[in-house]
Length: 32
Image 1 (cartoon, rainbow, N blue to C red):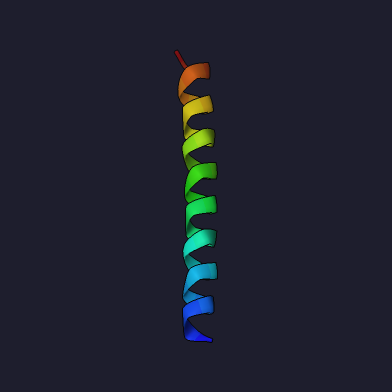
Image 2 (image 1 turned 90 degrees about the vertical axis):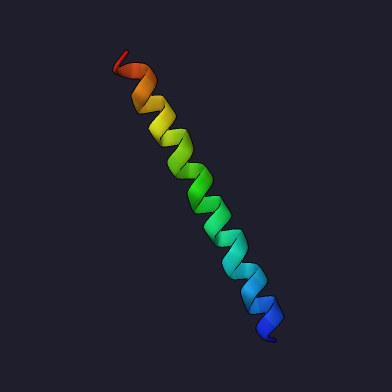
């Protein structure tokens, strides 16, 4: 149970992290 929760938590962090990177890249390109 704990391993599944940790895996879901890790996947969620990766998903949010990738979204932030994509948003930051888009804003950075638009401000150039």
